[in-house]
Length: 163
Image: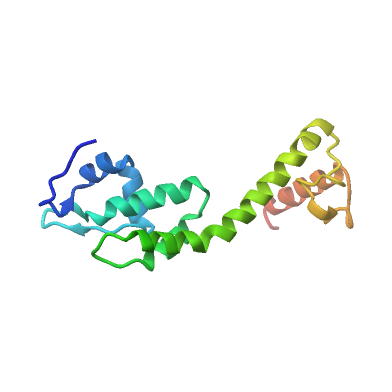
């Protein structure tokens, strides 16, 4: 990993990419979504503050655990500008996501527990499938592969030109 001297307070997109491990295109995407910011030089080149390194690391870590980018952006908007966020700043943000992550873990556990039954049955009924039809919400109206045909028919009707 290339070292950047302490006296350099701004990074080019290439330097930020090399240090953070994020592709240049990812950095541009993060910037377009408001996750990081840059200033433009007189030559229209991007320059990022050194705090962008921590912000990019935070974005990538949050993405790995499944936090949506909009949620990450909202969290980053609460952080101080022009300084590297502290350990306390990050701890406060991660505490706010704990219940969301706990719920996601429970959902994944339920998926794991029912996945073998779902893949193994091959019934296409959807009447009692806990993955495709939790709590049998479709069963009150229609059951079986007719549900698939009904959905396909509705899509075809939408695609037909109006007379």
